[in-house]
Length: 135
Ligand SMILES: [Zn+2]
Image (cartoon, rainbow, N blue to C red; front, side, top):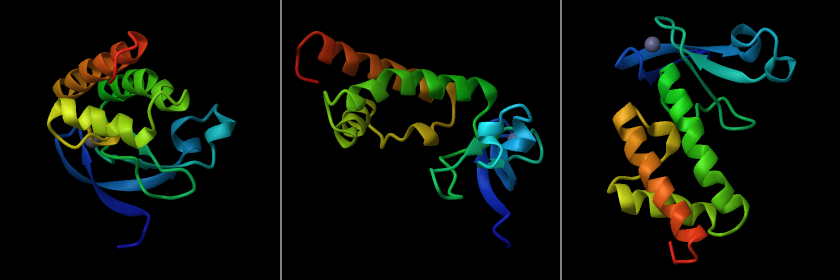
């Protein structure tokens, strides 16, 4: 297989799909800042996932639009926790995994139910920090 095609789980199609490598220009024609960013797109439904910075490695599964929004909301909760150094990034993900009972990566969320559980866990972690308690 050339590296322009890769099997990735599509959360909208509920199956592994042969995702195609495109650039941001194909998905966001008006975002010049994203024009050269590699993204993997589902050929069936058009959903897509970005890549780890500087690589063509997908950030995770291809989310449905709803799941994409949910992942962003979760990042909005947990990213400030490590950015503001309340915990290390590793500790945040460890705390999420501990609360959820499964190894947590935002990019690996496959369903809205998983995302809801993750959101609740993230809220508990943030509350623990804001309340001054140990997370
Ligand atoms: Zn799809």
